[in-house]
Length: 250
Image (cartoon, rainbow, N blue to C red; front, side, top):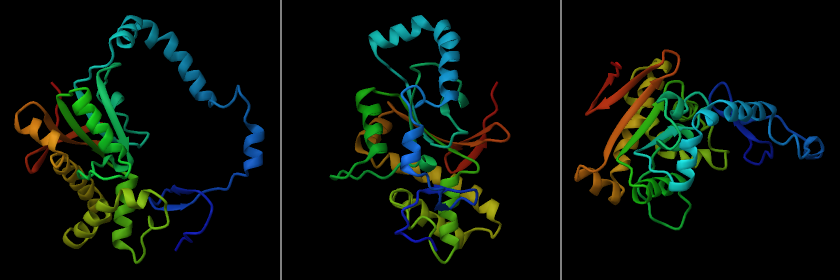
């Protein structure tokens, strides 16, 4: 079991549990940082391509967004996973989509207290400030956060316990994982798949615990959708009532 006092960074490993990462000496790190090298080279190159292609092609659109502000119609709650960028999955242009990303694409329940609630604050801004018309919760296959929660439900010790933030963030998912582990099949991949779907369903249910989401949803002014992405196959599945169905684009 990892030592909670271990000062090394905790990272999500290939086995989908939090484990100590490599130690980087601060002196060596800062010695290598210079004003012209702080932005990683791939990002410098990528920005160059953006300026030369997309920005050049949509210059007027960006000018309009700068002057008039954003008015996206949809907010997407998605995982921070680098493989599942909603703007790419839905081929969205600038200003079309307000995106909230976090570990495992979770929507917490409504908890108005003195603590910091980044996801809830972003939802509040999107609904009350931007007046979005739809909310999509986008889960995905091979989610590391879901796998870590499932590992904790099946093991004698919780791999997330020593972390500063992740364990607390996905505590509801961990509880859901324990219920699923007790009720579902014994195949690990099947359990993972089921928990990914149940997680989206729980987040969709949590959305209507926010009074300003519930009132708009009940009035027909705000739609709510659950979705799950198969990364390797490029397929999207949508939550329809209590069932899931594959989306077949026309």
